[in-house]
Image 1: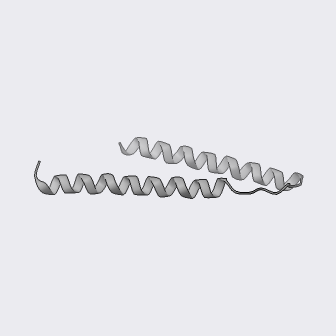
Image 2 (image 1 turned 120 degrees about the horizontal axis):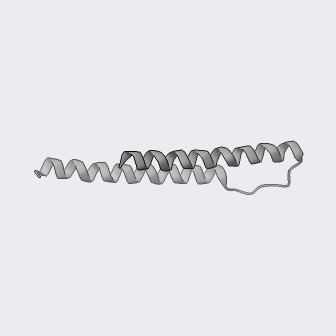
Length: 68
């Protein structure tokens, strides 16, 4: 391995970790937070939002696995 290949590999690994870290932080920010008591229709919207975040996390996990 020459120096260029080593540098490229290390850069790629660092960028992957950075992107994954920011994705996790962003998804957590969307999912968590104080939730006031909500009425029936609002509760349904909250539930669908949580499910959407769960699906987004799963999709992120799958794409990370595929990238390996």
